[in-house]
Image 1 (spheres, one colour):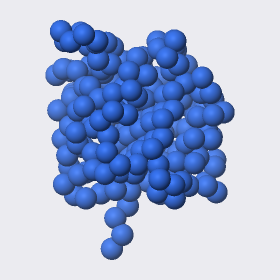
Image 2 (cartoon, rainbow, N blue to C red; image 1 turned 45 degrees about the horizontal axis):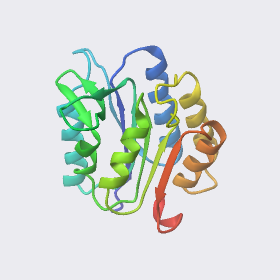
Image 3 (cartoon, helix red, strand yellow; image 1 turned 90 degrees about the vertical axis):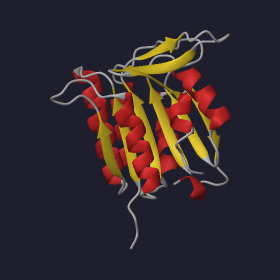
Image 4 (tube, rainbow, N blue to C red; image 1 turned 90 degrees about the horizontal axis):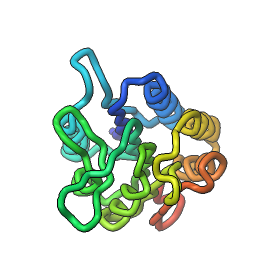
Length: 196
């Protein structure tokens, strides 16, 4: 029995803009046969860091292929006494940082699209910590890390969903080139086939 690949879609902001981003990502993933797992606000309020970590661990324990992690909402800098602050996303029960994700991933391949303020810091930290083949994307440029995400992500996901004639990561890269050319992209894929 073939196990369907999954995508974890994470949103810490219940404003319509970010809800629309999640819906657009869900639709694009579905077009590629990737099952979305959505972590966002519900009737009990904002999502928790614990829920994100539990979901990552559950996917790993179930040996489900993880094709994508998408983070949207609000990112902040975490000043934790180190020389350089960490990019983070705050949840009801505390901040989520790059190592919380990187330490719970298998060997890949995986794509991660980070659509929050200070995303270039996430990309840098994930690049240093992740094993195996991966593709890291952000629409935020290094010199404008708090650029508004209005319209960028929904257009990105629309283009991804319309381009099913190529592998998933190729579609991600092509959509990124179209709408985020001054953003940050780092890929460590042995081949496009390896990064589906």
